[in-house]
Length: 205
Image 1 (cartoon, helix red, strand yellow):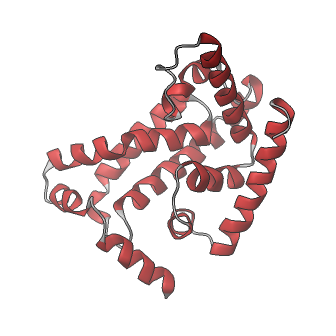
Image 2 (tube, one colour):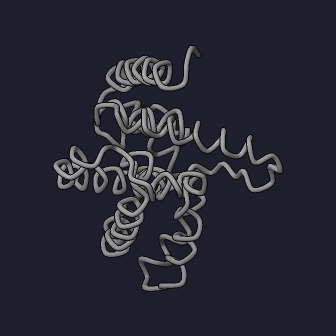
Image 3 (cartoon, one colour):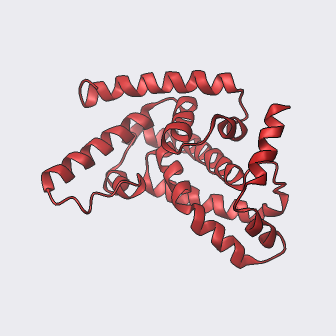
């Protein structure tokens, strides 16, 4: 009952709802507003989940197409963003299964992913004048993403959603359809595994 109540409260303060309603009435311009609002965060989630820039772009595009086609099914039982990011997570998980053989052969991150991780992560080093600091920041970001990608899928997704994207536990429950206790236990294990991995590739934290 509490989860239903939380979903209704979330939907009530959903800033996207007016545009969703317009889109459901056939106003395509309204969907463009939704795309502008969420495309960067959706791409960030896809990249963090997959560790590959090109795959993340493909998944993000597929997610917007899927959302547009099924927008009339959105019932405002939760925030639009929660519904939207659930689509991204599911598509990313499906794509990872399809590409699992190639990923094992090529490793978790290819060169292009490494070249684009600065843009995707939301951290900009353009204003940093020291080339040495820029290189150090890029290398650190690369290693962080490498460790995130190395996590088991069930741990990686909760870590990305909670610690990187900042979703609430209730939102993550709704996205992944798992109990609160499962979210918290997976997150704890994910954090420990990430810390262990970073200690090996970067040093003591």
